[in-house]
Image (cartoon, rainbow, N blue to C red; front, side, top):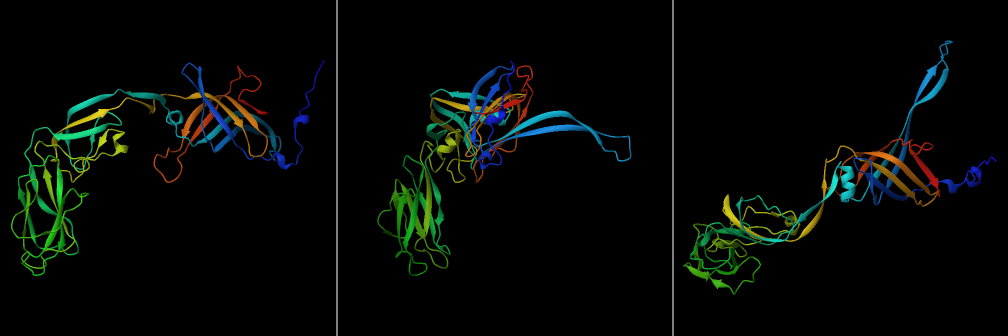
Length: 374
């Protein structure tokens, strides 16, 4: 007995606004290994655009039997389809698809590293081969004597004062830091500075002590550090609000985090320790670095590790309006298209183009794909 299936029973009447489509849905991709064996099916996340584009190439024959040369025949020369997906979610799996790569895991075993020797260059970071390091300490390779730097201007108010500040003494402190001298009262008469006043503090964030009168002779600040105020030859000697700096280096060569080297959590993720231009570490000198390495397993993408990416695609429609289609594409080959925006002022995204390949052996009646309105 022959049975004729009546598709019209499943069709909605036209015209009807119910036939319009405002599409949405979920996309699953299943990557295949080199032997063509399917791996795990994975959700591609939010995909704001999914276009399925036919490319039908036809060959035409025109009549040669009269001068009008009318179109005599037309036939399909080739048939192809392309699926284009805009990917929003920058996961390792999605990145591997877009970079012709593979996923992997970088493993790190906890350890304590002590006294590794590196060369420190001002304005250039030191790079260690571990991630998310903590408790970083840097010291000179060879023990060095304590040192007191010359007085330099740290903050000037308008035209700088002409007085000369001379540092001295023997530093007995145990940390590398800086002393800051702030003029709180300017001298009234040029060349006479004994009516001026100043405060001092060790470390820019410290709280200064009570104001001290300038004597014009050697005055001790703390930990063996001294300063002497000498009047200038002309102009205003000392100006209220000006700040001067005296850098000090402790014997033994231990350097100070935040001053001599920078501990920035985002950069420590990659094992990067910046050495600023203002560091007290001598440029080009050898230093000893100690730090802790935590246990870790970090997803990674090995870009350009494969020659081809093939698999199958499943789309489950869930439109805001219109018919819900489930699309099964049996065999696709991926071609990345467009940039991956790792820096930008908008949400990052990239495009995957999937060439649909025929699978007539396994699906003789629907070799490219099927769309089911379920």
